[in-house]
Image (cartoon, rainbow, N blue to C red; front, side, top):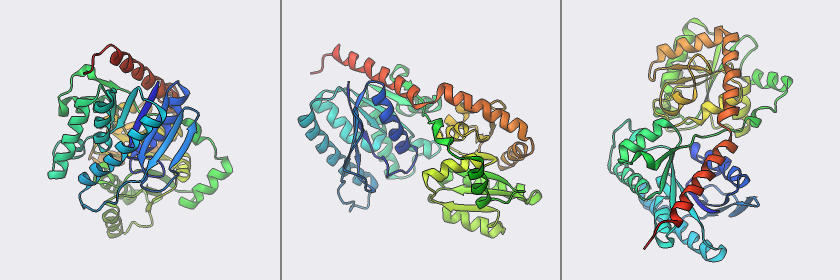
Length: 400
Protein backbone atom coordinates (compact mmCIF):
# COMPACT_ATOMS: atom_id res chain seq x y z
CA UNK A 1 0.00 0.00 0.00
CA UNK A 2 1.27 3.47 -0.91
CA UNK A 3 0.48 6.22 1.59
CA UNK A 4 0.87 9.97 1.09
CA UNK A 5 1.22 11.66 4.47
CA UNK A 6 0.98 15.40 5.11
CA UNK A 7 2.19 17.12 8.28
CA UNK A 8 2.85 20.74 9.22
CA UNK A 9 5.63 19.65 11.59
CA UNK A 10 8.57 17.37 11.04
CA UNK A 11 12.11 17.58 12.46
CA UNK A 12 13.91 19.90 12.68
CA UNK A 13 10.62 21.86 12.86
CA UNK A 14 8.99 20.81 16.14
CA UNK A 15 6.42 22.92 17.99
CA UNK A 16 4.30 20.45 19.92
CA UNK A 17 3.93 16.69 19.97
CA UNK A 18 2.74 16.31 16.37
CA UNK A 19 6.19 16.50 14.78
CA UNK A 20 7.65 13.96 17.19
CA UNK A 21 4.64 11.70 16.60
CA UNK A 22 5.10 11.76 12.83
CA UNK A 23 8.87 11.29 13.03
CA UNK A 24 8.52 8.15 15.14
CA UNK A 25 5.51 6.80 13.27
CA UNK A 26 6.96 7.02 9.76
CA UNK A 27 9.70 4.35 9.99
CA UNK A 28 7.46 2.15 12.15
CA UNK A 29 4.79 2.17 9.42
CA UNK A 30 7.43 1.17 6.88
CA UNK A 31 8.51 -1.74 9.07
CA UNK A 32 4.93 -2.99 9.10
CA UNK A 33 4.25 -3.02 5.39
CA UNK A 34 3.27 0.51 4.38
CA UNK A 35 5.19 2.51 1.77
CA UNK A 36 4.98 6.09 3.06
CA UNK A 37 5.87 9.41 1.46
CA UNK A 38 5.68 12.41 3.79
CA UNK A 39 5.29 16.02 2.65
CA UNK A 40 6.02 18.77 5.18
CA UNK A 41 6.84 22.49 4.94
CA UNK A 42 10.56 23.20 5.24
CA UNK A 43 10.32 25.71 8.08
CA UNK A 44 13.66 25.18 9.81
CA UNK A 45 15.98 23.66 7.28
CA UNK A 46 16.69 19.99 6.83
CA UNK A 47 17.31 18.21 3.54
CA UNK A 48 14.74 18.70 0.84
CA UNK A 49 14.65 14.92 0.43
CA UNK A 50 15.45 12.33 3.10
CA UNK A 51 15.18 8.54 2.83
CA UNK A 52 14.37 7.08 6.24
CA UNK A 53 13.83 3.49 5.13
CA UNK A 54 13.45 1.63 1.84
CA UNK A 55 9.72 2.27 2.25
CA UNK A 56 9.69 5.67 3.99
CA UNK A 57 10.84 9.03 2.66
CA UNK A 58 10.39 12.72 3.43
CA UNK A 59 10.05 15.69 1.08
CA UNK A 60 10.49 19.05 2.81
CA UNK A 61 8.75 21.67 0.69
CA UNK A 62 9.92 25.29 0.79
CA UNK A 63 6.84 27.32 1.78
CA UNK A 64 5.96 30.74 0.34
CA UNK A 65 7.15 33.78 2.23
CA UNK A 66 4.65 34.59 4.99
CA UNK A 67 3.71 38.17 4.26
CA UNK A 68 0.03 38.44 5.12
CA UNK A 69 0.34 38.71 8.88
CA UNK A 70 -2.53 36.24 9.11
CA UNK A 71 -1.59 32.74 10.24
CA UNK A 72 -4.68 31.13 8.75
CA UNK A 73 -4.10 32.74 5.36
CA UNK A 74 -0.39 31.86 5.45
CA UNK A 75 -1.29 28.25 6.19
CA UNK A 76 -3.65 28.23 3.21
CA UNK A 77 -0.91 29.54 0.90
CA UNK A 78 1.52 26.93 2.18
CA UNK A 79 -1.05 24.24 1.44
CA UNK A 80 -1.12 25.31 -2.20
CA UNK A 81 2.63 24.62 -2.38
CA UNK A 82 2.19 21.24 -0.69
CA UNK A 83 -0.62 20.35 -3.08
CA UNK A 84 1.47 21.28 -6.14
CA UNK A 85 4.34 19.09 -4.95
CA UNK A 86 1.96 16.21 -4.27
CA UNK A 87 0.54 16.40 -7.81
CA UNK A 88 4.10 16.25 -9.19
CA UNK A 89 4.87 13.18 -7.08
CA UNK A 90 1.66 11.56 -8.28
CA UNK A 91 2.89 11.98 -11.86
CA UNK A 92 6.49 10.95 -11.19
CA UNK A 93 6.09 8.02 -8.78
CA UNK A 94 2.60 6.71 -9.46
CA UNK A 95 -0.67 6.90 -7.59
CA UNK A 96 -1.17 6.61 -3.86
CA UNK A 97 -3.72 4.35 -2.20
CA UNK A 98 -4.51 6.64 0.73
CA UNK A 99 -3.83 10.16 2.04
CA UNK A 100 -3.12 10.66 5.73
CA UNK A 101 -3.31 14.26 7.03
CA UNK A 102 -2.22 15.37 10.49
CA UNK A 103 -4.48 18.16 11.77
CA UNK A 104 -6.11 21.11 10.02
CA UNK A 105 -2.86 22.84 9.03
CA UNK A 106 -2.52 20.55 6.01
CA UNK A 107 -6.24 20.03 5.49
CA UNK A 108 -6.66 22.24 2.40
CA UNK A 109 -4.08 20.28 0.38
CA UNK A 110 -5.34 16.95 1.69
CA UNK A 111 -8.95 17.61 0.73
CA UNK A 112 -8.02 18.85 -2.74
CA UNK A 113 -5.87 15.78 -3.38
CA UNK A 114 -8.64 13.51 -2.17
CA UNK A 115 -11.16 14.96 -4.62
CA UNK A 116 -8.89 15.32 -7.63
CA UNK A 117 -7.37 11.84 -7.36
CA UNK A 118 -10.44 10.12 -5.86
CA UNK A 119 -8.28 8.76 -3.07
CA UNK A 120 -9.54 8.12 0.48
CA UNK A 121 -8.43 10.49 3.22
CA UNK A 122 -7.63 9.60 6.83
CA UNK A 123 -6.83 12.26 9.39
CA UNK A 124 -5.29 12.25 12.85
CA UNK A 125 -6.61 15.02 15.08
CA UNK A 126 -3.96 15.85 17.67
CA UNK A 127 -5.84 18.76 19.27
CA UNK A 128 -8.71 21.12 18.49
CA UNK A 129 -8.92 24.89 18.56
CA UNK A 130 -12.04 24.82 20.68
CA UNK A 131 -10.42 22.39 23.11
CA UNK A 132 -7.40 24.67 23.50
CA UNK A 133 -9.86 27.47 24.27
CA UNK A 134 -11.48 25.36 27.01
CA UNK A 135 -14.64 25.04 24.94
CA UNK A 136 -14.63 28.58 23.55
CA UNK A 137 -13.60 30.13 20.23
CA UNK A 138 -12.03 33.55 20.76
CA UNK A 139 -11.73 35.65 17.64
CA UNK A 140 -12.06 35.26 13.88
CA UNK A 141 -8.93 33.14 13.44
CA UNK A 142 -10.13 30.63 16.03
CA UNK A 143 -13.50 30.39 14.31
CA UNK A 144 -11.79 29.88 10.94
CA UNK A 145 -9.54 27.13 12.33
CA UNK A 146 -12.53 25.40 13.90
CA UNK A 147 -14.25 25.48 10.51
CA UNK A 148 -11.18 23.99 8.82
CA UNK A 149 -11.10 21.21 11.43
CA UNK A 150 -14.78 20.49 10.82
CA UNK A 151 -14.28 20.23 7.06
CA UNK A 152 -11.28 17.95 7.46
CA UNK A 153 -13.16 15.53 9.70
CA UNK A 154 -16.18 15.69 7.38
CA UNK A 155 -14.09 14.82 4.32
CA UNK A 156 -12.09 12.08 6.05
CA UNK A 157 -12.98 8.43 5.59
CA UNK A 158 -11.82 7.78 9.13
CA UNK A 159 -10.71 10.11 11.94
CA UNK A 160 -7.95 8.92 14.27
CA UNK A 161 -8.09 10.27 17.82
CA UNK A 162 -5.10 9.72 20.10
CA UNK A 163 -7.21 9.15 23.22
CA UNK A 164 -10.78 8.40 24.26
CA UNK A 165 -10.94 12.00 25.46
CA UNK A 166 -10.08 13.26 21.97
CA UNK A 167 -12.55 10.83 20.42
CA UNK A 168 -15.32 12.33 22.54
CA UNK A 169 -14.13 15.85 21.73
CA UNK A 170 -14.13 15.44 17.94
CA UNK A 171 -17.45 13.62 18.07
CA UNK A 172 -19.08 16.40 20.09
CA UNK A 173 -17.40 19.39 18.42
CA UNK A 174 -17.80 18.17 14.83
CA UNK A 175 -20.95 16.04 15.10
CA UNK A 176 -19.17 12.92 13.84
CA UNK A 177 -20.75 9.46 13.92
CA UNK A 178 -19.03 7.20 16.44
CA UNK A 179 -18.11 4.57 13.84
CA UNK A 180 -16.07 7.13 11.90
CA UNK A 181 -13.65 7.62 14.83
CA UNK A 182 -10.80 5.24 15.69
CA UNK A 183 -8.71 5.60 18.84
CA UNK A 184 -5.00 4.91 18.25
CA UNK A 185 -2.75 6.36 20.96
CA UNK A 186 0.65 7.98 20.76
CA UNK A 187 3.70 5.84 21.37
CA UNK A 188 7.21 6.03 22.74
CA UNK A 189 10.50 4.18 22.27
CA UNK A 190 11.71 2.91 25.68
CA UNK A 191 15.18 2.29 24.21
CA UNK A 192 15.75 6.06 24.20
CA UNK A 193 16.17 6.07 27.96
CA UNK A 194 18.74 3.38 28.64
CA UNK A 195 22.02 5.03 27.64
CA UNK A 196 23.30 6.68 30.84
CA UNK A 197 25.67 4.84 33.18
CA UNK A 198 25.45 5.38 36.94
CA UNK A 199 28.47 7.68 36.76
CA UNK A 200 26.95 9.72 33.92
CA UNK A 201 23.70 10.06 35.84
CA UNK A 202 25.54 11.33 38.90
CA UNK A 203 27.47 13.86 36.82
CA UNK A 204 24.35 15.13 35.08
CA UNK A 205 22.33 15.38 38.26
CA UNK A 206 25.14 17.37 39.92
CA UNK A 207 24.69 20.03 37.22
CA UNK A 208 21.10 20.63 38.34
CA UNK A 209 20.90 19.78 42.04
CA UNK A 210 23.14 19.23 45.05
CA UNK A 211 23.43 15.69 46.48
CA UNK A 212 21.04 16.49 49.35
CA UNK A 213 18.41 18.06 47.06
CA UNK A 214 15.49 16.39 45.30
CA UNK A 215 14.71 17.18 41.69
CA UNK A 216 11.26 17.84 40.19
CA UNK A 217 11.10 18.02 36.38
CA UNK A 218 8.66 19.57 33.90
CA UNK A 219 9.29 19.40 30.16
CA UNK A 220 6.97 20.82 27.52
CA UNK A 221 5.67 24.00 26.01
CA UNK A 222 5.51 26.84 28.51
CA UNK A 223 1.90 27.73 27.77
CA UNK A 224 -1.08 28.58 29.95
CA UNK A 225 -2.89 25.38 28.90
CA UNK A 226 0.03 23.26 30.15
CA UNK A 227 -0.63 24.37 33.74
CA UNK A 228 2.86 25.81 34.28
CA UNK A 229 1.60 28.49 36.66
CA UNK A 230 -0.18 25.80 38.67
CA UNK A 231 3.09 23.89 39.02
CA UNK A 232 4.98 27.07 39.87
CA UNK A 233 2.53 27.81 42.68
CA UNK A 234 2.83 24.22 43.94
CA UNK A 235 6.62 24.66 43.92
CA UNK A 236 6.26 27.86 45.97
CA UNK A 237 4.18 25.99 48.55
CA UNK A 238 6.68 23.13 48.78
CA UNK A 239 9.71 25.42 49.04
CA UNK A 240 8.09 27.29 51.93
CA UNK A 241 8.58 24.18 54.09
CA UNK A 242 11.23 22.20 52.20
CA UNK A 243 13.91 24.45 50.69
CA UNK A 244 16.01 21.44 49.61
CA UNK A 245 13.98 20.77 46.48
CA UNK A 246 14.90 21.97 42.99
CA UNK A 247 12.42 22.46 40.15
CA UNK A 248 13.27 22.41 36.45
CA UNK A 249 10.89 23.91 33.89
CA UNK A 250 12.33 22.98 30.48
CA UNK A 251 10.89 24.31 27.24
CA UNK A 252 9.82 27.50 25.55
CA UNK A 253 6.46 29.16 25.04
CA UNK A 254 4.42 32.31 25.11
CA UNK A 255 4.26 32.65 28.91
CA UNK A 256 7.93 31.90 29.67
CA UNK A 257 8.79 35.53 30.40
CA UNK A 258 5.71 35.99 32.59
CA UNK A 259 6.56 32.83 34.50
CA UNK A 260 10.15 33.97 34.95
CA UNK A 261 8.94 37.32 36.34
CA UNK A 262 6.64 35.58 38.80
CA UNK A 263 9.37 33.25 40.05
CA UNK A 264 11.75 36.20 40.45
CA UNK A 265 9.12 38.17 42.38
CA UNK A 266 8.85 35.26 44.81
CA UNK A 267 12.63 35.27 45.23
CA UNK A 268 12.84 31.66 44.07
CA UNK A 269 14.96 31.92 40.92
CA UNK A 270 17.68 29.83 42.58
CA UNK A 271 15.18 27.05 43.38
CA UNK A 272 13.06 27.09 40.22
CA UNK A 273 15.12 26.88 37.03
CA UNK A 274 13.49 28.03 33.79
CA UNK A 275 15.92 26.54 31.31
CA UNK A 276 14.20 27.49 28.06
CA UNK A 277 15.00 25.25 25.10
CA UNK A 278 16.90 22.02 25.77
CA UNK A 279 18.05 19.39 23.27
CA UNK A 280 16.19 16.13 22.78
CA UNK A 281 19.14 14.25 24.26
CA UNK A 282 19.15 16.35 27.43
CA UNK A 283 15.35 16.10 27.67
CA UNK A 284 15.60 12.30 27.76
CA UNK A 285 18.55 12.31 30.16
CA UNK A 286 16.78 14.53 32.69
CA UNK A 287 13.95 12.01 32.95
CA UNK A 288 16.58 9.54 34.14
CA UNK A 289 17.95 11.75 36.94
CA UNK A 290 14.77 13.47 38.16
CA UNK A 291 13.02 12.22 41.29
CA UNK A 292 9.62 12.92 39.77
CA UNK A 293 8.25 14.30 36.51
CA UNK A 294 5.15 16.51 36.76
CA UNK A 295 2.70 17.43 34.00
CA UNK A 296 -0.12 19.65 35.34
CA UNK A 297 -1.95 20.39 32.07
CA UNK A 298 -5.31 22.13 31.99
CA UNK A 299 -5.98 20.73 28.50
CA UNK A 300 -4.14 17.74 27.05
CA UNK A 301 -5.41 15.66 24.12
CA UNK A 302 -2.84 12.97 24.83
CA UNK A 303 0.33 14.06 26.59
CA UNK A 304 3.25 12.13 25.14
CA UNK A 305 5.50 13.54 27.89
CA UNK A 306 3.68 11.32 30.35
CA UNK A 307 4.62 8.27 28.29
CA UNK A 308 8.21 9.47 28.07
CA UNK A 309 8.51 9.70 31.85
CA UNK A 310 7.00 6.24 32.21
CA UNK A 311 9.36 4.80 29.58
CA UNK A 312 12.30 6.34 31.47
CA UNK A 313 11.08 4.72 34.73
CA UNK A 314 10.71 8.15 36.29
CA UNK A 315 7.86 8.51 38.82
CA UNK A 316 5.14 10.62 37.26
CA UNK A 317 2.39 12.97 38.46
CA UNK A 318 -0.21 14.27 36.01
CA UNK A 319 -3.40 16.28 36.11
CA UNK A 320 -6.47 14.16 35.50
CA UNK A 321 -7.38 15.64 32.13
CA UNK A 322 -7.60 14.28 28.61
CA UNK A 323 -5.16 11.65 27.49
CA UNK A 324 -2.90 12.15 30.50
CA UNK A 325 -5.66 10.93 32.74
CA UNK A 326 -6.10 7.84 30.57
CA UNK A 327 -2.43 6.89 30.41
CA UNK A 328 -1.76 7.04 34.18
CA UNK A 329 -3.57 4.69 36.57
CA UNK A 330 -3.73 6.60 39.85
CA UNK A 331 -1.86 4.89 42.65
CA UNK A 332 -0.74 2.09 40.31
CA UNK A 333 1.47 3.62 37.59
CA UNK A 334 1.65 7.17 38.93
CA UNK A 335 -0.34 9.86 40.66
CA UNK A 336 -3.22 11.93 39.30
CA UNK A 337 -4.57 15.20 40.68
CA UNK A 338 -7.49 17.39 39.62
CA UNK A 339 -6.45 20.14 37.19
CA UNK A 340 -5.79 23.68 38.41
CA UNK A 341 -5.33 22.63 42.05
CA UNK A 342 -1.85 23.69 43.11
CA UNK A 343 -2.49 22.61 46.71
CA UNK A 344 -3.28 19.03 45.73
CA UNK A 345 -0.43 19.02 43.24
CA UNK A 346 1.99 20.12 45.99
CA UNK A 347 0.65 17.34 48.20
CA UNK A 348 1.19 14.70 45.49
CA UNK A 349 4.75 15.93 44.84
CA UNK A 350 5.54 15.76 48.57
CA UNK A 351 4.18 12.20 48.73
CA UNK A 352 6.24 11.09 45.76
CA UNK A 353 9.41 12.64 47.16
CA UNK A 354 8.91 11.27 50.68
CA UNK A 355 7.85 7.69 49.89
CA UNK A 356 10.50 6.74 47.36
CA UNK A 357 9.90 3.01 47.56
CA UNK A 358 6.26 3.41 46.51
CA UNK A 359 7.12 5.98 43.83
CA UNK A 360 9.71 3.66 42.25
CA UNK A 361 7.34 0.70 42.48
CA UNK A 362 4.71 2.64 40.51
CA UNK A 363 7.38 3.72 38.02
CA UNK A 364 8.33 0.09 37.41
CA UNK A 365 4.69 -0.82 36.76
CA UNK A 366 4.37 2.18 34.44
CA UNK A 367 7.38 1.01 32.42
CA UNK A 368 5.79 -2.42 31.97
CA UNK A 369 2.55 -0.82 30.73
CA UNK A 370 4.45 1.27 28.18
CA UNK A 371 6.21 -1.81 26.81
CA UNK A 372 2.90 -3.68 26.56
CA UNK A 373 0.69 -0.99 25.06
CA UNK A 374 2.50 2.09 23.79
CA UNK A 375 5.45 1.17 21.58
CA UNK A 376 5.56 2.63 18.08
CA UNK A 377 5.45 -0.84 16.52
CA UNK A 378 2.12 -1.44 18.24
CA UNK A 379 0.79 1.91 17.09
CA UNK A 380 2.03 1.31 13.53
CA UNK A 381 0.37 -2.12 13.36
CA UNK A 382 -2.96 -0.54 14.31
CA UNK A 383 -2.63 2.21 11.72
CA UNK A 384 -1.61 -0.17 8.92
CA UNK A 385 -4.67 -2.30 9.70
CA UNK A 386 -6.84 0.82 9.51
CA UNK A 387 -5.22 1.74 6.17
CA UNK A 388 -6.08 -1.74 4.84
CA UNK A 389 -9.69 -1.43 5.92
CA UNK A 390 -10.10 2.00 4.31
CA UNK A 391 -8.38 0.99 1.07
CA UNK A 392 -10.56 -2.13 0.79
CA UNK A 393 -13.66 -0.05 1.50
CA UNK A 394 -12.64 2.39 -1.23
CA UNK A 395 -12.32 -0.45 -3.75
CA UNK A 396 -15.93 -1.42 -3.02
CA UNK A 397 -17.19 2.16 -3.36
CA UNK A 398 -18.30 3.88 -6.58
CA UNK A 399 -16.72 7.35 -6.79
CA UNK A 400 -18.04 9.58 -9.55
